[in-house]
Length: 100
Image (tube, rainbow, N blue to C red; front, side):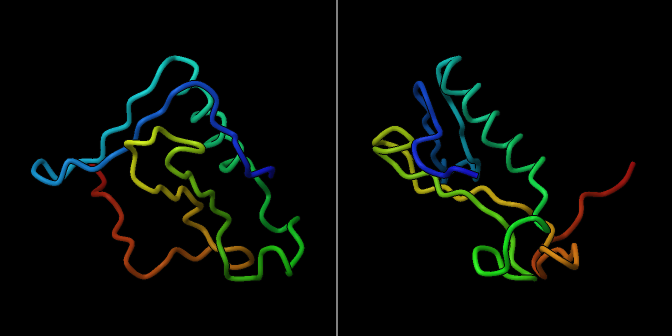
């Protein structure tokens, strides 16, 4: 997946520490562009990526950088796959949501 300057339009992502929330705001073009990046990541077949670029056990991810991909007021963001290449394992800190 091409990883540079994927976000078109305006996108602002930051952490509200007092509320303990991540806020994602954007123009329609920025939000659609972010959605496209997320869909590309979700639909990517990690097993088709060579082991040099993505070793077995690693997870594909995408860096969104302030003043390049995001607004200058954003924080650094990494979006990535939860499932590891090869095993499909999740990382240890992951706690699944409760099933209703």
